[in-house]
Amino acid sequence: MKKMAALFGRRNELYTMLNEKAKAYAAEKGIDYEWIPMDPYTVEDCVAALKDADCGLIDVERYDKEIFSQICERNKLLIRFGVGFDAVNLADAAKYGIRIARTQGANASGVAEYALLLIMTLRRKLMLGIKGVQTGNWAKEIGNETIGATVGILGFGAVGKIFARLLKGFGCRILAYDTYHDEAAAKELGVEFVDADTIFKESDSITVHLALNEATKGFVNAERLSMMKPDAVIVNTSRGPVIDDAALIAALKEHKIAGAGLDVFTQEPLPLDSEYLTLDNIIYSPHVASSTIQSLWGIYKMAVDIADGFFTGNETDQIRRCYLN
Picture 1 (cartoon, rainbow, N blue to C red):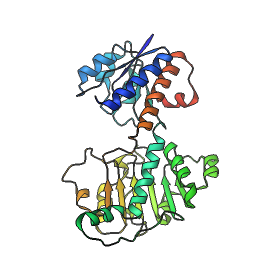
Picture 2 (picture 1 turned 180 degrees about the horizontal axis):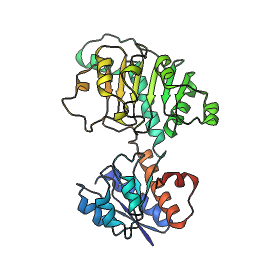
Picture 3 (picture 1 turned 90 degrees about the vertical axis):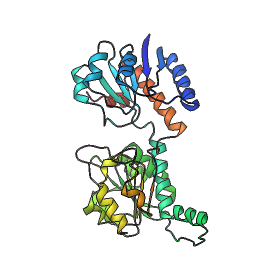
Picture 4 (picture 1 turned 180 degrees about the vertical axis):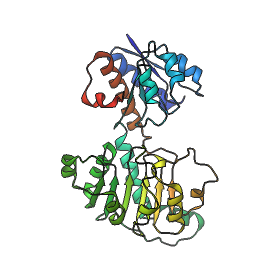
């Protein structure tokens, strides 16, 4: 029986339940699933857990030759709990014969729903209204509706597509930017592919769902922010460095745009001296867009499916696309 070591998840009731469910699901596929939470994480404990397993489910910590060189004799597959490879050295993994996968799309619905929540909260100025009630200021903030608005999607992947599907009942004009044009999905969802500048110029709301790489780092910059309408908002639930922080802070301070919603930051946790925390036209949260019970279970289930496909050689197209080396 193949062994899978799961390092993701804190010691609490929720993650205990999810891992028990994952263990039972894995057992149905003939996989011995063991949850070994890193609490706290150390390289030594990580290596000890992974070197005695055939594959591992890992979190956001740094993975490179220091770890790969010590686990590669048995462990041939690591699965990222999430979609990013930010901290995984793929070249080192390839050198030591370790395949790297990710649970892409498993948490897409949670992230898409959260992005829409941020947009509507900003457009209707909900946080200002809450603050007003708390302070006795009963002034009624006048916001904008999302119904009938123009919404721009930067990144038309799994999350972007679900976001567009959520908008179908809103009667919006939906614009999308992506290097790859999924024309079939665009036609089904009523989405128009445009260039990035058109997104910034014509959208009332922009949602960012770009993967982080050299081409997208600082993609949302001062020049593009200057193209936005003064009553437009932008939200980011992808990766912090996709946005140029200094440029966005300046645009918000000078009220060149109406607001921003950030669930991700260049530095996490966000430093308490960050200038973002001084602004009144921004809402933020601690990287929780995908933090739903449904999304978490979807990730655990997909991770077990990826491992099963890898061990049995019955890899689906979706699983095959996960492997980057």
